[in-house]
Image 1: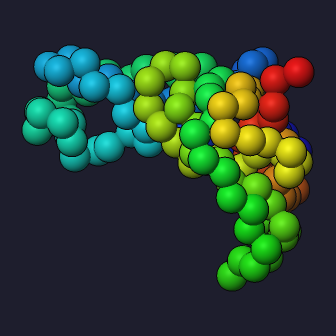
Image 2: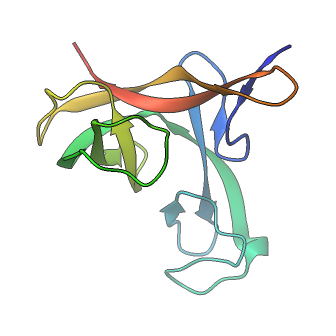
Length: 131
């Protein structure tokens, strides 16, 4: 039994965690999640994209609390935020707690998600307000 990322193509399990994005070598656009088709900004092919480690840290631009959800996980209520990462792109992610507001600085933390059929512990990225 091991600890694994729920989405290993999006996240590196380090301390602090690292988000896996990409940068276009033609126009320098930074994106997450990685797009296998090429750059959305300049149209360069996927061969012009390089992997880029993004810091799991940023600023909250919008926040919403979800009270009803069509899946059993995550359990409701949970808070989703629009976060501009320090490295550039804007993402949506779950933020621990309900006391997060626009302008808050947040950082990524690894949380236990589920267990797979082989007994491996799956972890995922959430954010928390920087104290």
